[in-house]
Length: 308
Image (cartoon, rainbow, N blue to C red; front, side, top):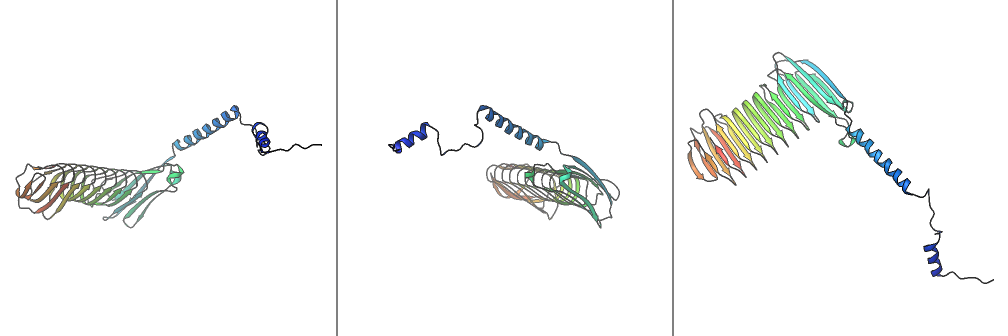
């Protein structure tokens, strides 16, 4: 019997046109029906996940009441949500917290001495898909000192008289009819003050600063936004208004007594008030109004400076 030799050419033809012995198929052949089924299952899974993420989380309202003495302090530390503080007669601190997705939030309101502390923190991470936050309304005696911080939300304070420290990473800060020394910081938001007596150290990385009907000493700065000030600067005060991008308007009330150094890198400096000037240029003005009992430094990198 003669044997037929199988050369490279034969092997190639067998593999190209005939069955391939080195390929082993696993599972059924994927025809159009199978592909359509797999695609449908994939879309269903995506829609189900999306529905789970957009489900309205459970909401729980907490209310707490505390009786405090004459030197009360309020401390709020929240991951996410607005904080609003207002005043009422008496010696009661009333807290109302609306907590969203409360099963994944840790909320606590306690008192130690005359210090009321409110904590609202997320248990997990943002990647877990929940929307936990706490919006907190607090009523306090007017003489309560404040330390308020939220990771994402506005902070508003009305009527208090002992000042405080206010901080939000993403939100506006507003003070109305307050007294005392305040420090306000926001990374992204406006700062607005309406009727204040005291001092303000106010900083925002992105937003405007409005200070109206204020008396005291003020240091306000923003990296991106205009600054407006109207009020009186007390004798001995060292005031600064600075922005990297925006105009600065100063409207002095009462009988001004101020040493002014005002400048702009790109714009003009103008004054409607009589100033005993020691340096006058289009973009720089140094001089004295009245007796010069307070100091005021003004600078913007891009914008006009208006004094009136």
